[in-house]
Image (cartoon, rainbow, N blue to C red; front, side, top):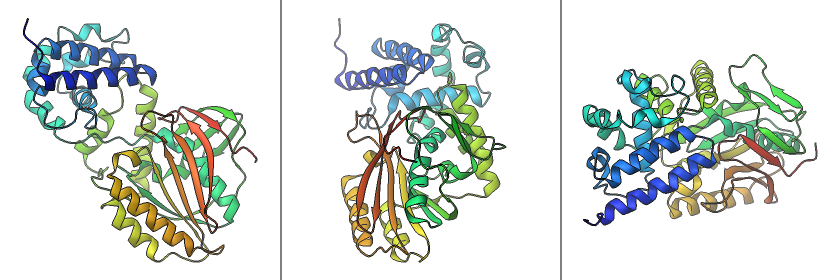
Length: 355
């Protein structure tokens, strides 16, 4: 029996890791699809022809997610009706019907899939706004000032319009009941200060590869990275796209470190400047993270009660750990751990619970 090429072993290991994540994050369909693709890869089938000589790190490059996203894009774009018939919501039982279809789909749409694989995944998980909201409310209550918002790694900018969504947190609610986006994470612990006088004065955002929501192909790519059996996530995404487009929200194409330096060079008195990000910090180079943290410390040393600076981040403390919502507020530089939460924001444990 011939040995599996070592590069294929690395790719198979990335599939095993991603399958575990999909199982734990509530996407049995995507986990099952990836198991089928991994079996085909191990057997040297069409998946091996597509992925077998991947030049990068398949885990860091999220290669299994790229392939799952490419197949979902074929379904959402109407290019593979036979595949769509075996996808949710038309086939809720599981991915078993896909097995006989995949070889033909991978062959017929080889060029499209190969092109899709060439670009990094773009996700913009709207559910994370349900975690971030508590931080914004805490900043508003502690400073008593309108917020100047700066988001890095913003993708399509959907989490820049978080104040136009509706939230149900435990037994309480916040936001616009008429919004097409309703977030109701499973909530544990106390509540953030929902009565804080929160007002957004301005909002700006950047990303290395921002998504233009006016471009149909880019919207399709964003939708394709939502797991096919998580229809509520897809509905939230579609609602947030509508809100962001109506608001005319745009994300600037820029490297985060110089963008942050420029934005924080001159902040306005009478406003609280808030730099925030969610589930992106670990993907930036170490020197970029150090540069941004240094800029924040330098600018924080000059902050005043009339022009405070806040750093709000929803990130895992280590790559495998549960993400945490942390807030550092200057002057003073006090850091608080406000919450822990599931990575997509579906469950939140609030720790800083005095309302």
